[in-house]
Image (cartoon, rainbow, N blue to C red):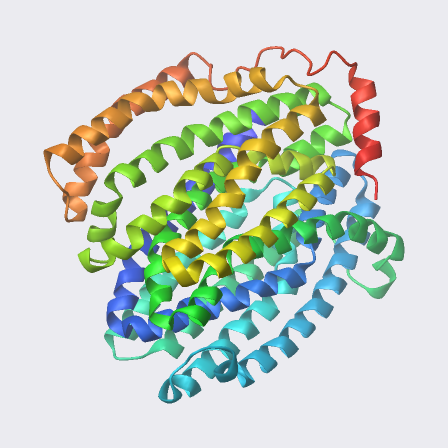
Length: 516
C-alpha cells in the first residue's frame, strides 16, 4: 500500500509539474520579450521579495502536515479538529500582519531598490497586488496542508494543474491584446487563490470538520509552536540560501542583471520542483511510521527515497551541464548564454548533491528530529549571505553564485548524510552504496551519449534539443524499466548498524540531543 500511495501521489505531482514546467518554459520568454528586461526584472524582484512572506508561516504548515498524518494514523479525530482550527486562527493573524507589511513595502519600494522614477508607480502597484494575494494565501493554504497530511497530494496537484493552464491562457490573451505587467500580475496571483477555494471544498467533503472559537486550543498552539519554531529556523535559512540573490544583485548591480541570474536560477528551480514532487510524499509517510514506532520502515523510506531522488536529479543535472548552452539558447535566446550558463553551472553542482538527498529532510520532519538540521542550515545561510555580498563586487553574478555554492556544498556533503545515518543507526558507507551507486551506474551511458550529441551538433531550437535529449535518455529509460521490473528500485536490504549500538540506545541519545 505504501508503494501504491507513493506511485499515485508522485505520478499526479509529476504530471502537474510537467505541465507547469512546459507552461513556464513558454511563458517566461514570452513575458520577457513582451515586457522587456526592466519590467521582467521588476516581476522577478516582486515575487522574490514577497517570497520572504513565507517566513510569516513560522513553520506552521510543516507542523500541520506532520500532525495531520500522525492524528490520522492514530484515529484521533478530536485532536485533528483542534489542530486545524488552531492552525486556521494562527494563519488568519499571520495574513493580517503580511498585509500590513505589503502596504509598507509598496509605499517605500523606491527607497529600497534601484527603480527608475518613471517605472516607480507601476512597481508600487505590482508589489501591492502580489503581496496582497500572498497575504490572503496564508489562511487559504490550510486546506492544502490538510490534504498533504492525509497523503492526498493528487487533489492538490489537480487543482494546481487547472490553475496553471488557466493562468497561461489568460496571460497570453492579456499580452496579445496589449495589457501590461499589472494585468499579468493580477492573473498570476488570482488563480492560486481560486485553487485554494476548491481544495477547501474537497477537505470539507473528506472530513467532518467543525469550526469555531471553542476548538481553538492553547495546548495545540504550544504543540505547534514547539515543532514549528525549529522549522522556522530552517525556513529562514532557506530564504537566505536561495532567495536573497535577486535582492543582492538588484542592490549591488542592477535590476536588469536580475534577469540574467533568474534565467539560470529558474532552471534549477524546475529541477528542484521535480525532485520535491517526489520527496514531499515522504513527510506524511515518515510521520505515520514514526507514530507507529516502525524504525525499520523509516530506514527503508530514507534509503529508497534518496535513491529515487538520485535517479531523477542525476540525468537532469547531466543534461543541464552538457547541453546547458543549447537549452538557454532555445529557451530565451543566445544573448543570455554568456552570463547565465556559468551561473547555472556554479549553482548546479552543489544543488545536485543536495537534491539527491532531499528525502533526508522530510524524514527528520516526520520524526520531529529536525533541530540539528535547522542549526546547520542556519549557519550555512549566514555564510551564504556574507560570501555573496563579499564576492559580488569583484566577480559580479559569478561571485553571488559562489556565495551560495560553497556553503551548500559543505552541508550537502559533510552534514546531511552523516547526521541521518547517525539518527537512523545506519553505516554511512552502506547508505551511500545502496542509495547512489545504482543511479550513477544507470546514468553513465546517458552522460556518454550527451557528450556525443553535443560534439555532433549544437542544438539551437526545441526540436533539435528534444532529439538530443530523447536519444541520450533511451539507455537510461531501459535501465529504469529493468530496475522496476526486477523491483530493485524498491529493494532495501538489512543495513548494518552505524556503531554497533542497539536501536533503543540510539533513539534515547537522539531524543536527548533534539530536546530544546
